[in-house]
Amino acid sequence: MSVIRIYQIISELDLNRQKFMSLKLENESVDSSIYAKVFEGNVGTDNLDQIYLIFNVNHPKDFLGHSLSISDVIEIEGSPKSSFYFCNTFGFLEINFDTTKVSNAQLIKTVIVEADKPPYEKYLLNDERAFLIELGNKVEKMQSHDNLCCYYNKDKNLFVASGEEGSYVSLNSLQAKQIKEQFHSRLNEEIKSQAASHTLQMY
Image (tube, rainbow, N blue to C red; front, side, top):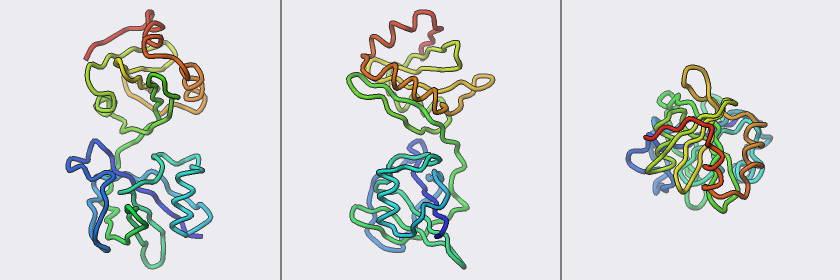
């Protein structure tokens, strides 16, 4: 089976709001500069419908994106060249896609906690601005002593792992699991009340 690659739009680069928008014409060119590669590997099939099912029902462990949806691009490696398919409203359209322009932006795993909702994992651009955009207005930040950082407001909480010198890295599997278990059914106010010993910074 061929190697496949999945590309998804990075919201912070999507100035024209192309994410989740459909295409009308086959072989249309897509602006690859707003996309990042979120998977590369072999999933045991070259069938587009089966690939779509795999990336919606049974994500590979090294998949860094959200479930496949409209505007995502599937590359099926071939000889002498690869084929690229745009996930459209109904089915797929073969498109022109320049991989040399794909963003090299780093995506990292975070955990999002919202009131009365099960916590969930989400990959975001490794940039504090992306965290602030995800949460919206009136965001505060708290830093724990176990290399975790939480950005939050009254509606939503975002957890990410702290790296060296103020940088950020992906949560590992254990960290993500512990956060989701701890905050599975708690309201935002309960989360904030546990932050008494943390350093708060208003943005």
